[in-house]
Length: 261
Image (cartoon, rainbow, N blue to C red; front, side, top):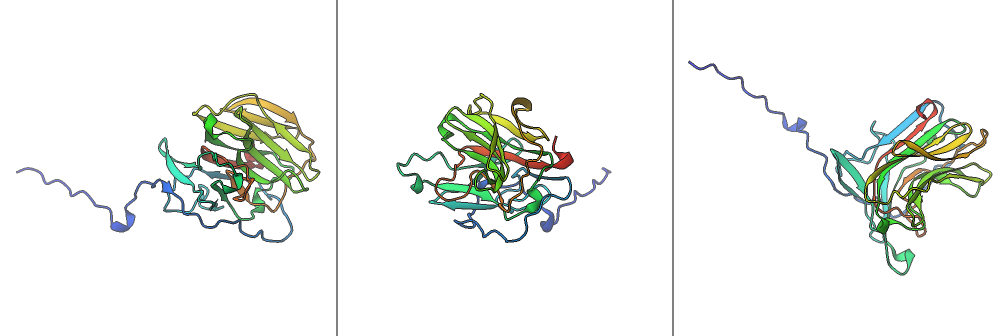
């Protein structure tokens, strides 16, 4: 008599795990949320956030720990998509606009709420993302990620791919409006994925491309970065003149303190 095989357990309906779904993100708003008032603080301990965008369109855009949510914003029909990338998903931005009036162009970004834990002060800082662009995606300004502004005494750290040569660059600025920029003469708008990283040490701002240091500038140890602005990915806001990114972004990260390498 043949042995009886054990029945294969079937997952309960509540535990079925579906693959994360690509598709368009629903824009929550066309405008930024008001910034919560209050004293500006800095990270009180080493701190790290990472976004891999692998949760799919059915979940909020949050970091890998499930916090620090980012909201999609869009104007003039601009929308963000989650698209397949490797074994996960990446964030795709609207195509570069060619309309005669920039104010009519579709615009879309991700934006968080005020989050002072992302303020490094004078601590070491590492931030970056993986990006894929072509020369058709380039413009005079294409912001990958930023917190704050470089003018008006706000302070800032930013990663961008500016100009039509496809050069990436790292930017930091303190409250004195002096801007420090590390820009290698490397074209990353070749249709391939590139890992871009900015490292702020006590005395330098270093730009790494695909893990290799490619440019650096000196920075004063006393330079402090702390502002009430939210983290923004893909532009400095949804309004006209936002330095809109075009292309795809994945694996955004910010590491403060001992996490910074």
